[in-house]
Image (cartoon, rainbow over all chains, first blue to last red; front, side, top):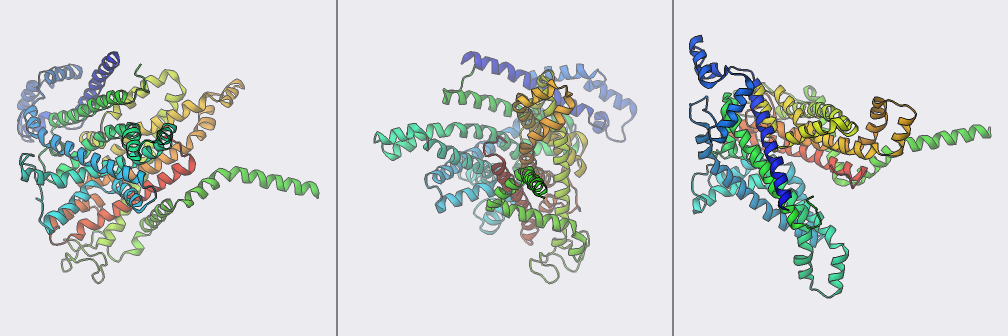
Length: 313
Length: 297
C-alpha cells in the first residue's frame, strides 16, 4: 500500500509538471504582447522594453518557465496585468468561496443522488423509481447556468425566500447558509443525477449476487442485508463516480459563480480571460487542474481501501 | 430455372445478412421509448434549422421598438419578443442552426483527431506510451477548463469555441478507440491478414477501424450533447458567441438582466438547450444499449 501511494505521488508530480508546462506554454504562444497589455497602447518603446526587462520576458522561454516554477514553489505567482495585484493574493482571498461552493454542492449531490438511487433500486419500476430515473435523465441535460437563473427567478425574485446572489456571509450563520442553498443546488444537480444513476444500477447488480441470496437464506433481516451487506459493495463504483464528478463540479463552479455573482476563482478566471491577464489565467487554471488531480489520487487510494479485490501492485 | 431461383434466394439471403446488423440496431433502438422521443426531437430540430428562413416571419436581428418585452402568446410573436423587440421564435430557430453546426463540426474534428491518435496508439506499441501520456495530461483539466484555457489563448469568439471544444473532444475519443483497437488487433483475422502481406494502413483502416464503429457512434452522439451544452455555457460566460448573435447561451445571459419584467427571455432558450441535450443523451444511451449493453463509453 505504501509503495503504491509513493508511486502515485511520483506520477502526480510528473502530471503537475506537465500541466504547468501546458498552461505556461499556451499563455506564452497566445497572441498579444504582455508588455503592451501592461503599458497600454500609448506606451513608448523604451517603456515597453523596461517592462519586458522587469518581467524577464527577454529571456529564453525555457528559462522563463523554470523561473515561473521556482516562483510558484515560493508562493509567487507573479503580478496581475490588470491591477498589478499579486496573483497569489487575489487567489487567496477568492479560494475560500470556491471551496465552500464546491464542497456544499458535492454534499447536496451525494445526499440527493444516493437517496434517489437507493430508493429507485429498492422499489424498482415503482412510480418512485420512474420519478427518480426521469430526474436523473433531465438533471444531466439541464444547463446549470440556466437552472441557476430559474431558481433565482422562483425562489429569490418571486417568492423572495432566498438571496439573489453573493456568498459574503460566513457559512455557519443563517444568512450564510441561505446564500449557499441556491448555488449548491444549481451546481450539485448534474452530479446528483449521475450519482443516482450509478448507485441505482450498482445496487441492482449487487442484490442479484450469490452472497446476498446466501445472507437472505440464512435468515438475515431484509434491512440488514440491504444496508450492511449490499450497500458496501454497491458503493464502490459510486465512489469513482463521485471522484470523477468532483472534477466536473470544479469546472462547474466557474459557471455557477458567474450566475450568482460569487467572488471565487471562477469569476477571477473569466475576468482574466476576457482581459487577457495571462499571469492570472495561468495561476487559476493551474490551481483548479492541480486540485483536480490531487482529488483523483485521493479517490484512487480510497478505492483500493474500500475494495480489497483491487490490487494496487 | 431452378438454378436461377437458387441464386436469387442466395443473394437475398446474403443481402439480409449484410444489413442485418444495422436493421437489428435500428429495431432495438425504436423499442426504446426515450430514444424514439430523442430521435423525434433531433429530427424536428434539424428540419427547423434547415428551413429557418421559411418558417419565421421576422429576421433574428430585426428590431421593433414598438413591440419590446412582448410575452409568450402575443399576436404575431407567439414566443414573445426581447428587449429590442426581436422575435424570440426566430432567434430560437436560428439558434438551433448555430447549435447544430457547432455540435456537428466540433464532434467531426474531435473524431478525426481522436480516431487517428487512438488507432496509432492502439496499433503501434512504440507510439502508445507517448500518445497516451499526452491524453492523460489533457484529462487532468476538469470539465470545461481545457476549452477555457484554449479560448484564453486564442481569444473569445464562436469560431474559437469550436476549436476549443474540438480539441477537448480528442482525448476521450482517442482513449475509446485505442481500447477497441487493443482488443481487436489480437484477433486471429488480423494475424491472418498480416501473414498474407497486408500493410499496416490497410489493416488499420479497412479491417480494424470498422470494428471500432459501435463505440465511436455512441461517443459521437453523447459528445454532441456535451458540445452543445458547453458552447451554450461558454457563450453565457461571454467567452463564445457575442451579442447580437442568436446563440442560446448568449440569449440566456442577456435575458437574465430582464428577469423581473420579461422572464421568458431567459426561460425559452434554456428549454431549447435542455430539449436538445436531452435528445442527444437519450439517443446515445439507446444506441449504447442497442449496439452492446456491456460497452464501456
